[in-house]
Image (cartoon, rainbow, N blue to C red; front, top):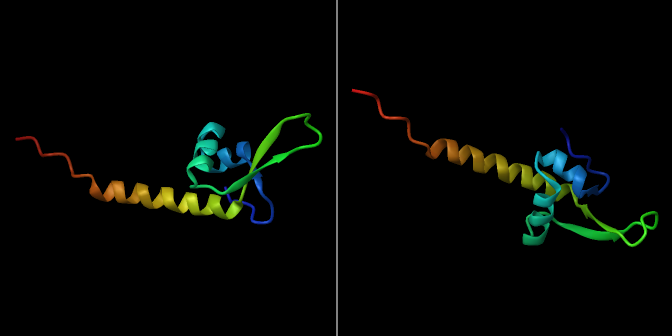
Length: 82
């Protein structure tokens, strides 16, 4: 699924792009691996939501894919039975 580059996404939309939960997206925002801003929606009384920068989503996807490939390279093959 391609990340749209023209608009910021909500935490729920970001979660679908990263194949994770919105709670994990909020955790990534809090530790700085995703960049975003908290915006209040005038249609939703008193409730604010996170909007995530699409460039940071693409960077996180790249980071995750490179971590997976490093893990696959580091895994040793199973020993052969004797």
